[in-house]
Length: 366
Image (cartoon, helix red, strand yellow):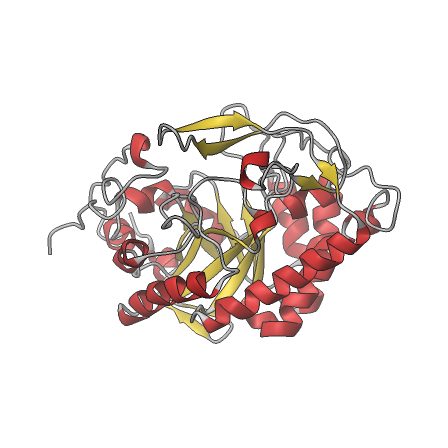
């Protein structure tokens, strides 16, 4: 089988990518505590995977308020910037390219992360969601239900936009090649987009235009700060979990894509629903979003090499992101190119812990 399309170089802004296989962002919960600081262990993990066309890091909170999971890294302190600098230097030393994913979880959080205060959201609505939290008494992690959040004020929304801008600047200071905003999976930007999570009565809720306002303000601020060629976003059109089954989300995301095209963003990253009985990511929608966003598109969602080649050849995407296969196969591009066997990952070591299941997966022998 020829996979020549997957291994054609691609120009992403100022970055020349050697092929089309991207490392997807994956929460691994291995930052140093206290302070949610990236370490040498994180640097080793990412450097091992520097043969990716592009690495998108695990999501990193833009502020203490943006945190929703134990041991996830941040990008809001000097110590975190220094920790991330170890990562970017290690990846660049191996010839890689790396974007930082910026994160505000919104209501997908717990009061234990906020000195007892409620998580924030566009609207104070109960929903079915849970986050991974470590019990400080036992050191064991478990999924914990999220409470009903409190509604953000206009002033707080403006402050969060400023936090995204500042986080993008810190990412540049840490040596990243760009940033990807996490606008998917039911986190804060996604919560503003959907009628099921956003029932505000002001200029940030109600109409499609109003529900898009927060996304537009965030992306405009980041683009102004670091340039559109270094600014990107991830969206999840067909997400239904976490109380996000919005009947208007597809046309809303199509309007977002048209805005992102106009702004000249580096790329649009579309995460496809990858659970059993998930809604189909239809070819009709792929055509509609491509018509509105002709700049680079990355797709992710249980792709294999053949399906990745297909989606690129159809013109629906330019790059394909792999998550779990990159965990167990640090040399994934080589294994795909040479059609070598893929190692299986140990799901018990995905979240938290040490080097086991993180940096101890071997590359294929030379």
